Length: 306
Image 1 (cartoon, rainbow, N blue to C red):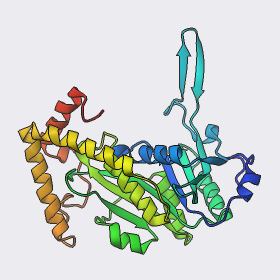
Image 2: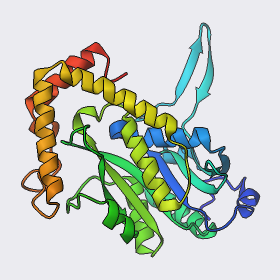
Image 3: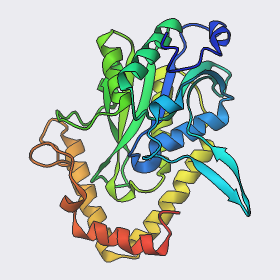
Image 4: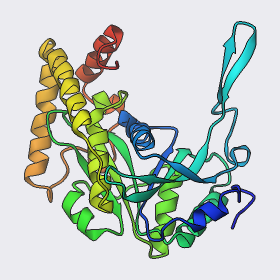
């Protein structure tokens, strides 16, 4: 084991963990469109009674100048220092079925050493499948079902759920690298890149969390209650729909996105109507100008982002 990168404190606890559990990865990176990773991590952490099995060494992995931990100043002294944490925990779903959760910050340093440590833990605990999810901002309407790009070794989920299959280069995350290494070793792994509406990507988008949870359940067989989340989704949609209805340019923008989405979904084998000629993801500057006007207007009012 890479004992220098994580504590051996819980070795006996890990020895008692059942073999063959699924592993869910919710590491936070520099970008989190729709707040997918943050929402998923919070949801699982709050509802699954996590028991820490591994604590990684923050001093070796975190760039403190890039991501400052928080501390509270209370009138004349400092209290409640909250250091960044990265850990592997044993959790349980709604019905008590156990699973593993790798959560916390994405390492800034020693990626290779970190990945080697995780791979050793995967082997030690005989992980059945590793699952992760994130989001990509796309010119898609919030009035249509979310879709995804699915990667990894689960051909059934790729066939069933992957609607956009580009070939492109992109900046790697540590989770990308983990999936790459697991795939190379023949381990079961699946990643879900959720295609979220570009104009809502700066918000915590409840639809994206719902999609991520559904994907995790499909990949692992775990069960989580989503009734409360569905209510939040309906309320969020009602708020956005109201704002769109009050602005003609926003309504025109939305109708255009709906038409492009519907045309693409009618024939997935045709050239994607959602991307540029080179297959690249559109930038903010390439989207319709009315989209930015929509964002500027309602960001000032503080409604959509609340």
